[in-house]
Image 1 (cartoon, rainbow, N blue to C red):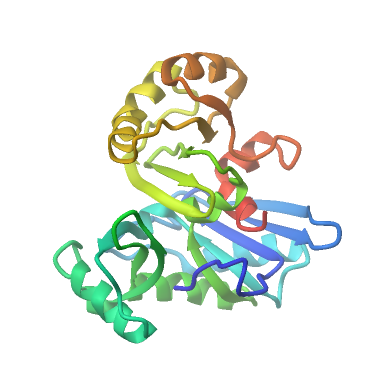
Image 2 (image 1 turned 90 degrees about the horizontal axis):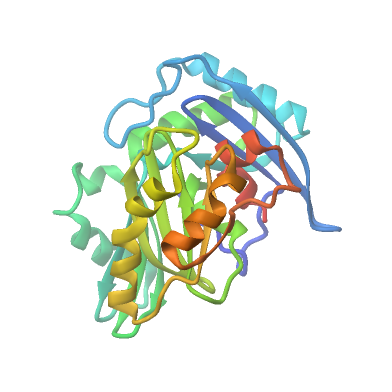
Length: 294
């Protein structure tokens, strides 16, 4: 699994996200920078069952067909793409170290050793991508881990659809591309099965949690606030600062809850994906693909 590092690589201009209920392809242009095209295809129930340590792709032909149709609609077939995977198929963890070896291979071995007893699967049978960043004391590592056989399922589907997954990201980390804030900012990506919560400041990922899905397209502001309250408190206790902004994705009628959510949390509230970029369904269901290109 590869990382998205804007400063060191030239990213593909097409992203394709797969989820249990559908596939979406997004194409961007560099000059001027903008989202140029977007297309989604629904998946029948049971074609894809995202999971951390089990078979995910139940109908490979149907998944590859949907990917191919979505990519063809935006002119992305035959290209290298950013492949965006369901959050429930990837484990994201933040790890603190006093220091890490300078050589990447040695640093990876150190990270794998730390993860050995923290995962419900064998780390030696998993793909690992990680990024180290300076912390208040030592080094903090943001690690993404996926069982190799699960990654192979997804990559095979993309290749069968006629594209090359040059960069592979979980949806929540891809969606962070839509966040450009120097103040502590929380991303909340609501989903029926799981709701990732992340806090970033500048280019640093400071907190990450995967909450159980809220299970409703229109949860109440009180329900959302209750779900994220422990994360807000944890961040303030550990960093001595409050989350100042909350960016939300996955709410069908955002305007109805935004003011109430701000009142409950004390943070300025906005939509994760600019409403001008996509229709509400696309920006809620496929924020990862859009964010990957922003």
